[in-house]
Length: 378
Image (cartoon, rainbow, N blue to C red; front, side, top):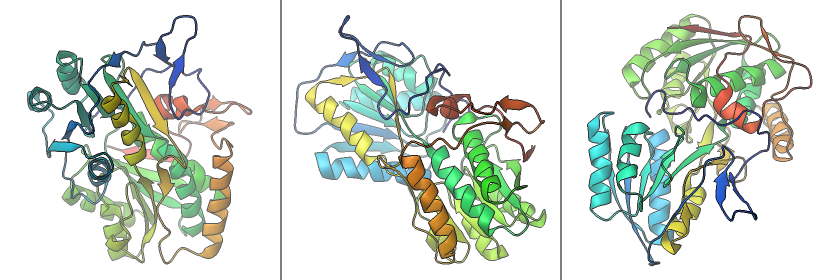
């Protein structure tokens, strides 16, 4: 996951909750996304299965982010009979581009980039316009054959924050940021977590430390211990792995994981996690590739009921906490927006007036400021 590759210049005025961002224009017959960029069909002869390539920046055994994407890869293999090749621990250099080119040159009709190579990935996509390029998140302008896939993880983070607020004693969340000033998923995750915590524990705040890596367990462990020493009794991260849960278990505090269901890393410490199932969305895309109707140039967001969920509760989470969070989750599923003003940033400036709410795409791409209660150390 390349720093800075997660930002998409989508107009902030769009307020609809989006599951698929393609719309059809009867007057022109063109398929466009909500950013106004045209989508173009990629034609292939329909076959029962296709060759695919997968590019990971880390290991599929990270017990987190890459493993969740790998589960999607396996899901496609089982349900659609696709064949796949993959590259793990791929460096963000020209090797990223050459890896993608190699897969495409060997017949891959769909190349998936969970590691978010950004322009390194797009360089290959542009040379093979008949290959479907699928990226986790992405940066506009996309090549016309590219699609970005992302979950509305801030919804889950808000609910996790509510649970944290009911379980914290110090009112302090210790948070690891993979990179500073990165809206998706770092700032939105942290902001939503703090807002949820403040909803159930007024005065809740977060102290955050920047790791400058998505996966570095030794550094993460050191920083997490320092956060506990600073009186944080809830740990959370945007890291690919469950280090927060492991450290929390050893230190006698609680933790929220970013990816998967790492309860085995600390049964006493574990509260819950953001669990993302990429399988259904990836399957829909792969089916269009197989049929020859794939259209790129768009971004696909999915929320609760479409691949996003909370992991099962940890065994020490009280029933009252589960019930309150579940009630809020049901409100979200009915369309209630919890991200409304008045909302202030961490300098005290008013960012959203009373009655104003963040749209789905604003939360995804434009939430580039920290909410009140967040302090960040570099």
